[in-house]
Amino acid sequence: MQDPNYHYKNTHWFTEEHHIFRAQLRKWIEANLTPHADAWEAARLFPREVFTEVGKMGFLGVRYPEDVGGSAGDIWHTMVWAEELPRSLMAGLSMALLVQSDMATPIINEIGTAEQKQEFLAPAITGEKIAALGVSESGAGSDVAGIRTFAKKDGDDYVINGSKMWITNGSRADFITLAARTNMEDRYGGISLFLFPTNTPGFAVSRKIAKVGNHCSDTAELFFEDCRIPKRYLLGHEGAGFYYIMQNFQGERLVGAASGTAGAQLVLDNTVKYCQERRAFGKPLTGFQVTRHKIVDMETELEATRRLTYHAADLFGRGAPSQREVSMAKLMAAQVALRVADQCLHLHGGMGYTDEMHVSRAWRDTKLLGIGGGTNEVMKEILSKVMAL
Image 1 (cartoon, rainbow, N blue to C red):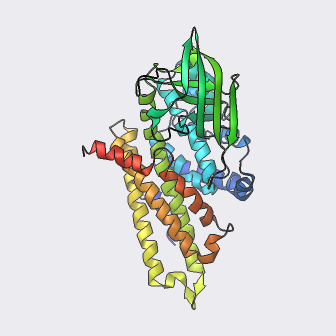
Image 2: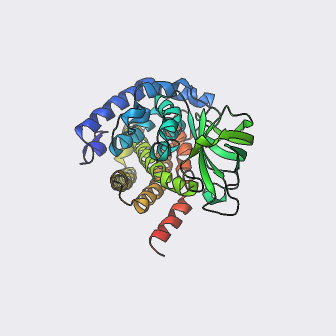
Image 3: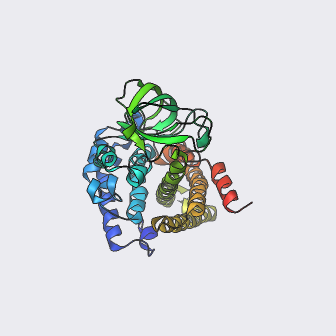
C-alpha cells in the first residue's frame, strides 16, 4: 500500500514547516479525538471542551494574526488543518471546528474593528467562545439574498426579529455572525452583518435538527424576537452584508473542498487495505481486475480533485481572483467524494452496510458536501456566469 502521506509530500506547495505541522496535528487528532468517534456519534454531540482543547493547541487560529491570538500561518496551514480533521472519523466534528475557524470568524478578522476582534475573534481562537454562522433560513438556503430576518435601527441599537435554519454549532454558540435585512426593499444592498451574542434576551434555540449524517455536531433552528443589540455589533458597513457573505463563501468552500477530498482519500485508503485482506474465491479482492480498476479510477479522480483544490488555494492565498477555481473545486470535490464513498461501501459488501465500519458513516456524511455552502447546482450557476454563458 502506498505511503498515506504521498499525496501531500509530492507537491511543491507544502514546505517542511507544513509537513511538521501536519504530523503534529495528525498525532494529536488520532490520540485525542479519533478514539471517541463511536461514542460521540452515538451521543449525537461531542463535548464542548473539545473547542477549548483544540484552541489551546493553536489549531483554531492557524492563519489569524498574532495580535488576536493566532499563529500567523498561511493558506497552506489552513489546508493542512482541513485535510487532517477527517482523521477524527467524524465529519460532524470536522464541520463544527471548520465553522469555528474558517466560516464564522474570517470576516471578523477582515472587516471587524479592534474592539470586535478582541470581544469575539480572540476568544473564538482560544475556543473560549463557540461561534456559528447565521445566514440560512427555511426559505433562503443557497439563495442568500432571500433572507427575511430583519434588523431595525432604534436609536443606538438594532432590534432583530426572525429565524435561522440549519445552523451548525447553533444550539451552543456563544455568538453568531448573523446576516439580517436592514432594508426590505433592496434585495442585495439591504443585508447587513452583525455579531450577535446568544445571551441576548429574546433569542431562543427552537430545536436541534436530526440529520442523516454528521451526527456528532449540533445543527439548530434559531429564533429572534425583539432582540436588542448595540450598533457597535454591526460588522462592517450597513447594507454591505450580501457582498461580505459572498467574499466569505470563498474560504468556506475552499476548506470544504479540501476536507471533503481528504476525507474521501482516507476512506479509499482504508478500503484498499480491506480489499487486500478480504478474500473471496481463494484470493484477495484486489486479486480481481474489476476491483483494481475501480480503485485506480477513484485514486485518479481524487488526485485530480486535490490538484484543482490546491490551485484554487494558491490563488486564494495570494489574493488573486479565485471564484472560478474555488467553485470548480467545491463542485468537483462534492461529486467525486460522494462517488468514492459509494464505491468504497460497495467494495465492503455486506459489512459496508453496517454501522461497524467507518465507510458507512462516511457514506452518510459525504452527501452534505454537495448541499452545504452552496449546492452543486449553485456552483454550476456561478461558473456559468463566470464563463459568460
